Length: 408
Image (cartoon, rainbow, N blue to C red; front, side, top):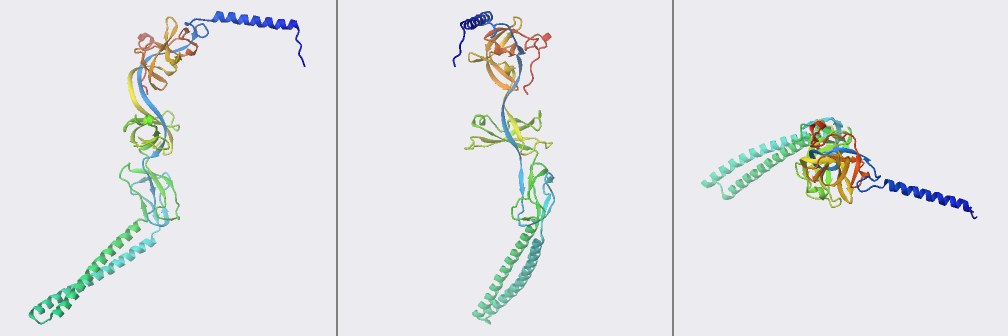
């Protein structure tokens, strides 16, 4: 189907297009500014902030996990039925405290049997000692009679053999007695294993039950886990770092730990261990940070953010991070002349970035005000409309000049 357009309508449409094009060109000519204007050709409304002197820290941020400094699995050294469990999850535990008791009747009987065997061995030793004493006296008499010629050599040899046999029997009974004593001690030790305890020398006097794996009445085998005992003060934060950060870390470096469970609260710690190798699969190394936890607020398994301080600089020139802009592939800031209401782009070299502030390394002694909002409408230089601004570093005291804080 063909659409027919009259010649009059075609002239009207063409004329309207020409008028719109002409008006657009006139508006462009009117608003077009030079290099000293904003993108719109007029003064640009901006927000400014003072350039200050302050302290900054070079911080690296890592994510990690909290883990107990000590995590001990409590397990029996002997098999048996769990008769009593004296602690449960969350209970405080002291070194040497009784935690669980196994059924001990069988082990008590073993001690009784070992004591009886020891008494028999002691009696045998006493008998062997008496027999050896008699054999010694018989040998002495036989030697006297042999010297006088009353006994023959054969008779002396027979008495000597009897004495040697009694001496050997005595030595055997001495060894048997020692064996029975050891067996008794062993049975007593096994009986003591029915009293399950845990002990430690370092890491505070109190720890806590972290997990329970068995209930009363359960049949346990050797090394069958019953409980875990964890140390909460201090606690460890474990992070993994790449080779870029690995060589900047040192034992004793301070660190600050924070977590979503405690917004606005930081826990201070220090690096205590750095793995001497990077894992081949992840190309990362394990780093352990010891964190003081006197209130036991931090718990193993929590996800945390860790900040490690590489360096600290005092008295450096700082500006808000959002004052940075790029023009012609160069990074800089728009320095404001408040009297002339003019903003001019100044290339800068930056250093440490912390908490929304950035260090200006060059040019030196930069002062005044910088544009923090609205600089995207400016070219290299432009007129600006500025609100009443806070005082900058170096301004007269009457304007309320005050340097920044310490960077924390």
